[in-house]
Image (tube, rainbow, N blue to C red; front, top):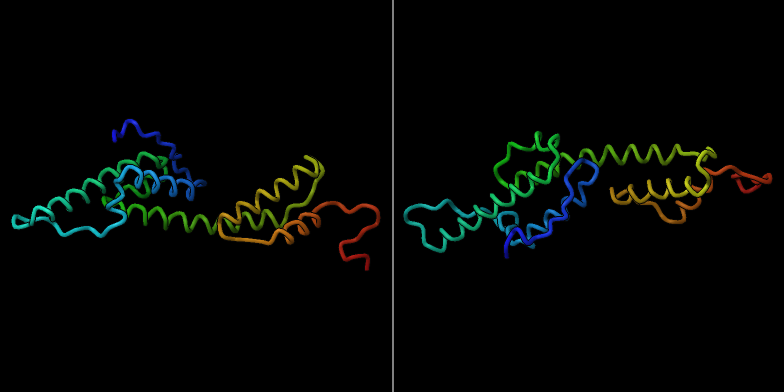
Length: 173
């Protein structure tokens, strides 16, 4: 397979697309058969007495690492690349990126929870837009492994809407 024939639809890692970015990076590395350095432990360094099979294995791992690093680094925005650029091993690079985004995922989840729990219908955009915005936040939270039941979501959204006709939120008590 020629690398120029590969349609590369990996988005640039910008900070808010980490999960899809990582999924596509790993898919493409596997599809291009250069993910060996990620999947397998690094082989021993070759010496003058190394067997030909050991030399081949080492070269395959080194090629996999080099090409994987090049592809990954071209798909990271400059601001993020600066903080993870010091790595020469693809596993270490991916681990550094993972660690950076686990922290930011927690911060994002907290921000979304606050947004979700303080949203109220203002009448500016309409009920449908309000409901869609709340559902969007719920979907984002789910992708960050903060889940809520569909029943809770429906009831909570209804509680954020204005009440008409003398209805109360406590069931009429």
